Amino acid sequence: MQGLDPFDGEQGQDTVFRDVIFLALAGFVAVVLLLLPHLHPPKEAEAAVQSPGNVIVEIRWPDELDADIDLWVEAPGDVPVGYSNKGGTIFNLLRDDLGQRGDTTALNYEISYSRGVPSGEYTINVHLYRNSGGYASIPVNVSVSLKARTNESARRVLATELLLEREGEERTAFRFSLDREGRLLRESVHDLPKPLRSG
Image 1 (cartoon, helix red, strand yellow):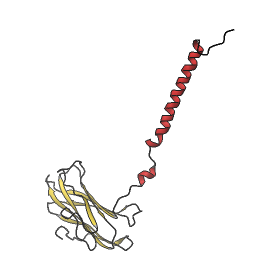
Image 2: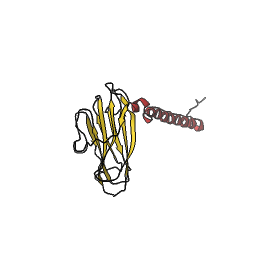
Image 3: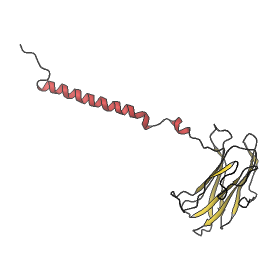
């Protein structure tokens, strides 16, 4: 009596075919399982990125406008910081936007950060340096965010919109005071003009 060879005939071919398909499917599932954690990083990794400054001042104006608007900030006991003096003891101007000149993006914005939150009065001004498009008025959004401690997230405490109408115009968006704990004193907020550009 002859022994049966499992690889003879149709039954043997079916077994080999099933084994190859099963191994290919198992390999595919293993690759997918190995890649899955890398497709969606954990949420806490995204939330770990925090802004470097304590007082963050930003201005934005419409991206399609070719206008150079400057942000000027002054911290208590420090010099005004703007395009011609980009750093003081407390504030630094991180972006000086010239409108559409020499810009790789269409975004129109400037931003300043402080190192620390000394108590006293802060002044935030905007200045229309150049109006290349000859616009009748340019709306500028100004916002101030604050984080008293390094491990906190910044939260917006002040926001407004100003209209600038002529080259050379400088307007005070905010004057406000912070206490020794780095908290905004709401009753101190006003917009009485204080020129910073010449200061």
